Length: 112
Length: 116
Image (tube, rainbow over all chains, first blue to last red; front, top):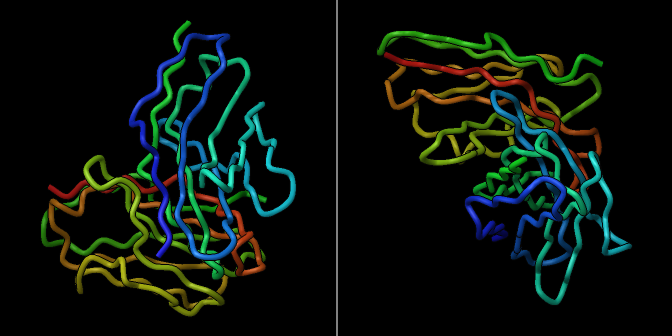
């Protein structure tokens, strides 16, 4: 069975500082990894995904994620955080049939 | 495209009443997912369809819950009878047409259900 872990319930950073939201995964076979963001009272929105190829994936709103096979991690990063990045972030891994297993989510708070 | 459409956006009902939530997926998407989100349990997959056929309903809490997808552009999630512990935000999502692991899910705005 596949699983995703987001070890931090909450991440706090100051505006302008780099941010990292952590995700580790467990799958048998090739991992298909995703990050989604949820703003208050909204549905989840796709940020980026890793399917194959370059380990550094670039996505929406200046976010990127680094796939590390040896550490089974897929951490979300941004060089300079904005207050508007404050939201709930979900890491997910897909099955071959396209079914997603989501992590528990990490609340990111960016303070001015 | 208008994205995934859900209705109603908010529903307040009394215990014992029937509740029907509706979803219109993005045109051309052939997979549809129903999720429930609560503070206590996070985001839970209830059921998903591929080409209008239910593939995995192992997340459906109990027989009070049922879901249908009569055609490619419409799905319902019904709770009968509803209970206070069903109060949650229910999301519908659809995914791009490959039906495989590369598919990105597109979520609707959700229905906030409150059962009194």
